[in-house]
Length: 364
Ligand code: FAD
Ligand code: UDP
Image (tube, rainbow, N blue to C red; front, side, top):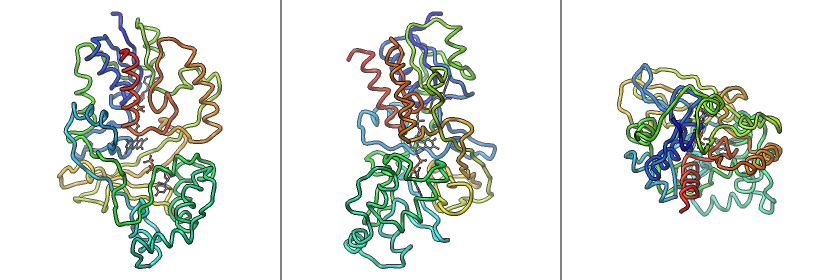
């Protein structure tokens, strides 16, 4: 069998492109995935307790891109869940993003919105030139809240302090002056009603698509014939590490069953200053599944294991640029997604990228 496209990686990047190429352009696609399942890091499944869990950490879909939202709605209904995250500080559970209640609780105040703004103006470093992830926070809320909520969490999560990370990391999190507790500000938010894996299965239901799991790209490349290649794995691996290894941060998850309806008040509780783990996830809040037991996951950051997070550091991006130049020399090969482009993309951004690459391929 001759394929039009070999696609490596069955996450959003690979599967959106497989779906588009197969259904719109009638191309024959071979989709290979190194792990034993499709859906990439968005993979979810029912565990032994019958609880739908996210194997690789909490995945909440959020987007302002109408084209992306319309696209994902072709394959699933969405449950309208609005994400809430609590952070445990000095034994108190407060809201993150920092809002009016966060400050009033931690500082034992009764500020209104105007007073909160006045407080931030009195403590924040107003004229700071933003060079890193620490500057982003202290320029908005000052040193005290930075130390309580961001400094140690970031060190646990990334293995380096916010000073050493590019501004984009903590810029993901807004600061609010009112009591809005919703984590993301996007227009569209939610989870697929029947789970992400089901959504992926629907995307890939097409006679033009052949899926091989437990298959590494480099084996597939030797065995199968294909005209074009789309690679969504780690770009340094693709080029046999010729410019050295790119750093990635990973997570180890410890799952635990509890014989009660809910374990904690929100889907995610962050622990900046206590414990070795960073956060506890309880998927039931997000999936809105009704069942008598629950499963939680503690997240332990590590350098070993699946490459989840490209490191947002200047030296790492300098290495990446060398690989990007190698990639530009190749014809008929597309590098798409979080690992292939070495970017801290959310799911919607990966889908957007894949739809844009498809437009280029289709000549639209
Ligand atoms: P992936 O999903 O990583 O898919 C790439 C696939 O390629 C993987 O399945 C991998 O096994 C496979 N692969 C790699 N190398 C090879 C090879 N050599 N051969 C064959 N296959 C290969 N985004 C959000 O929008 N909201 C969230 O709430 C959110 N939470 C997250 C929480 C965590 C803990 C993490 C790690 C990420 C989160 N994300 C979230 C980001 C989201 O996971 C990514 O944006 C998305 O999964 C990226 O899709 P992708 O296809 O680029 O990569
Ligand atoms: N962060 C923090 N304390 C928190 C939450 C987030 O210091 O309680 C910082 C940390 O550096 C983290 C970044 O903000 O990596 C982005 O947080 P987000 O929840 O978006 O991370 P993700 O879900 O992608 O791991």
